[in-house]
Amino acid sequence: MSTFVLVHGSWHDGSAWEPVIKHLEAKGHQAFAPTIAGHGKGANKNVNHAQCTQSIVDYIVDKDLTDIVLLGHSFGGTIIAKVAEAIHERIRRLIFLDAFVLNDGESLRDILPPDYQTLNDQLARTSDDNTLMLPFEIWRETFLNDTDLDLAKSSYAQLSPEPYQPLIDKLDLKQFYSLPIPKSYLYCTEDNVLPQGEQWGWHPRMSNRLGIFRLVQMPGSHEVIFSNPIGLAEKIIVAGRD
Picture 1 (cartoon, one colour):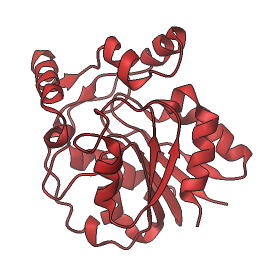
Picture 2 (cartoon, one colour):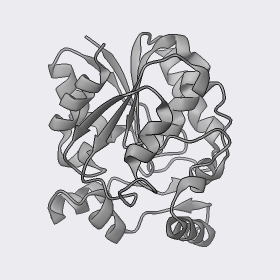
Picture 3 (tube, one colour):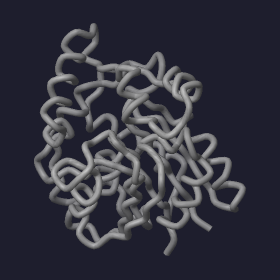
Picture 4 (cartoon, helix red, strand yellow):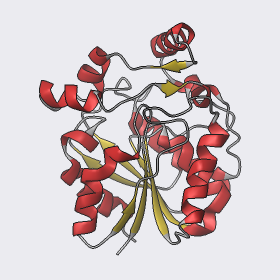
């Protein structure tokens, strides 16, 4: 059985994983879902990417977790890459769930389509604390397009503003790309957050940056964490197996 550490994406906190964790534990696995520094309702949003990463490193070390399968969703992909650099000896496999895979020297902002860059810059600039809040219309049509309106509304209510600094920090990833840790990419085929296709999409654009990797696919949107947590848990098990 495996020990999973599940790292959430932008606007989320660790509580979003609860239904997934329940199913993983029912299958005999251990699963943990820390909240990244600066995330969640009421959190201090004045954080950078290094502080976000360190919060996950500290969580894993404090709990003395070893031989883990470390998963990052969306923005969480940038976090697990840097966590792997810091504590690679504790990690058995990395899973990128519709996650950003940056090249050395890039920021997350750098690899977004220009209209997303403009929108995010505007949202951060007009906020009081350099955060951005995802408009509901985008959440409904591109993030969670595989469920009904009620679930779209209730899940949106769980979100909180995203610190912008971690998205614009450029990351040195030379060490990450030298690590021999096995990697998986879990791709949801109806994920419409990034325009589908080779120019902007998750797969194959992001996934192929991993070099040798295991590809696992499932139907669903970017937010199957809400729309199909049981199906997601089953695919996480497949993506994390030896």
